[in-house]
Image (cartoon, rainbow, N blue to C red; front, side):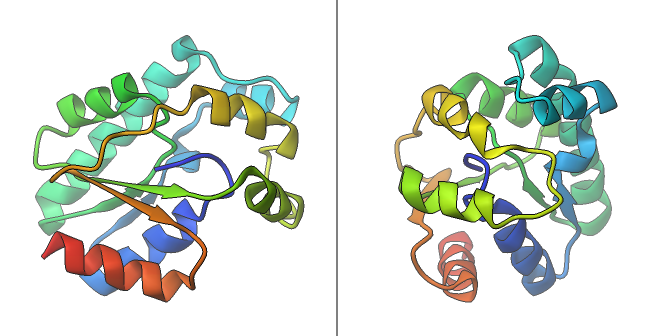
Length: 159
């Protein structure tokens, strides 16, 4: 979880491969209308997000039931969104928050060609983000190291 540009997709794909389980890219569960809204520089509202979270949650639950586990990349910016995912998935859910400075995130977004999420929406995501407290269900990592190092930290935490 985390704001755009934090490395969710990169880490999620690495984790899925390491865990030999499906990786679900949360971006692919957005409705075409939500994608166009973001492409146009408008932040999503809760009304836009609830159906997206439900679609991703159902797909994650199905993948997890079929394969024993699954990895999903999703912003999950607010506690209510994380609670919604937990309730839809229905099995043991853990979150990893990927964090970094606004400057680093902005640089990453500006070097990500072809993605619909414009860098202009970063500040709205940062403002929406409710940092979870670190606990048994949440790991917070700063993405200032190589993705494979982050993968190994997550795998060690999951054990």
